[in-house]
Image 1: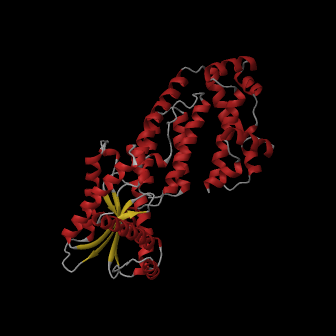
Image 2: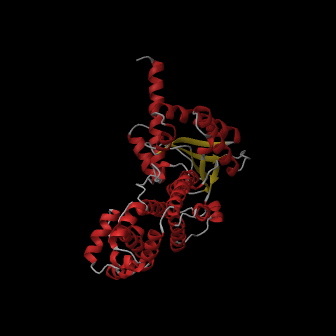
Image 3: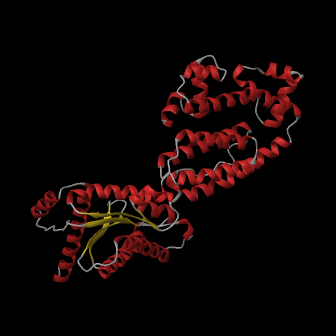
Length: 411
């Protein structure tokens, strides 16, 4: 091997080992252990941690793949270009630095910035400029709708002890994960989150979702969209992934239950409903809105074409489902035969009276499981079912999960 090739290989090897050591430093290994490990392998690892800032920026590989469909090679090329620009900028600002891929699988860009005596640009400004720089690098490389992407840079500033590096890195990663709640290229800090965060209690969330369900079931498009739109800022400003996940799961259930009730075969259910499929909460909300609009319009259209018999039957069932009312009793209250009621209801609603009653009972059982601490036997009685084992079987068949596990998931 020629001398130049050997030197290039050695340089690449040293670069890899430094990235390896820096990652382990951020994961919590002591710097003394890393230095000893490096010495045993014929390397040197020196770094001054008397004062430093940690930044985390750029796409992870999984985000990159889901948003662009790009391959590993194009991801690495983009990373190299962004890294070069960041390093040049930091040198111009008077910051010594380490710029490297954080987590060798996901490879977001981690930055350790060490202000020198002639550094005059505040770290907050540096972080904002880096966030914009990386965003522009992506825009140059890939053709995608820029409104569907943001580059949030997380910053944990002014650390002065080497023991703080691992906790600061974890804090930085947590901040970067909150990028889901932002739709602009910006910098996330603990101070900013504390200033912007508002608490959104779970009981308030479920009350809001119950109103949303009632609006959809009534086909009230205007009220449905108002409730849906007012829910968005409450979840966004909570910066709470658990709240967001709970809201999404409940909306999925509401849509499915409405589709079941009106025999719509889930045709208004979005193809892909998972937090990991969306780069931001705003895009997730935008993807849900058209389906809710169409669902309300379809329900409204169907209800306009319902006969007096069917509308009366629905009204009776919603009022008396928990009292164990039967098809014969509903027919008697309307003043028609049970057979006539069955034919009319099946033709107009696309499902039988018993199935509709079961749906009402299960929907209300869900609400009681989520919003109260009542025992399952008590909930059975409240929705008009006397046998707890039968209730559990029906619930499992209806939702694919037992009442006990459903409550556990909510908790």
